[in-house]
Length: 294
Image (cartoon, rainbow, N blue to C red; front, top):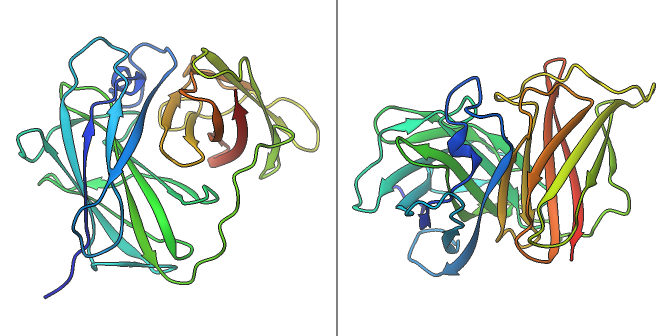
C-alpha cells in the first residue's frame, strides 16, 4: 500500500485586505493592509514528521470567525530534496465538508508560500484548482529538512484565510543559519537596487514600509514597475520562528514606482524576515530583508 503523508491542521479565519481584494485583475478598494496569525503546535499521527498547528486569526473586521481545515499531502508519500513532487491541498469547513467554492484573491484562487526552517529559502507559487476539491502543484525543495507551507485563500462569501503546516523533506541537510537583522536595508537583485524604510520599528505600531526601486548602475528611480498579481507588489513577513505570518498588500495597488508603500503592524517584538516582490520587464524580483522590532 502506498504510504501517504497527511499533514492536517485546523485554522481560524484571518481577516485582512486579502478579502477586500477578492476580484481578479483589480483590487476592490485600493487600500493596503495585512492579515496575520500565530501558531501553536501539537502532535498528531501521520506517516511523516511534522507539527500540527492551530492558527489564531486576528479579527480586524469585526466579524465572527469561521473554522477551516487544510490537508496537505505529497502524492508520492514523501518529498525528497531536488526531486519534483506533487503537493495536494484540500480544504474542509467546520463541519468537515469539502470546500468547493473559492474567490479570486489577487488573480489566484490560492497563494502558497513555502519557507525552510531558517527562512533562507522562500517560494511563492500558485496551485491549480481541479474543480473537485483539491488544489495541486508540482514543486521541489532544494535540500532536506523542515519546511513550512502557508496556504492563502478566500472561501466564497468569506474572508482571507491562511492555513499552514510544517513538512519534512528527505535528503541531505545543511546547518541552519541564524536569522540576523540586516545592518543596511538596501539590496541589489537582478540589477535593481531596492531600499526599504520603516516608519516605525515598534511592535503593534502602525508601520509604513516603503520600498524604493532604482537601477543599480544609473541610480535612477524605476517608475515603470509592472502589475504583479494585480498590484505593484506583494510583501510577506515572518517572525524568525515562522509562528507569526503577515501577508501585506500595497497602499496604492496601481502605483508603478519608484516607491511602493505597504502598511502593517508587527504583532510582537523580535526578529522578522521580510520578502518584497515586484515585477519589472516581465521578471519578478524577490528582495529579502531582516529587521529587529522592539
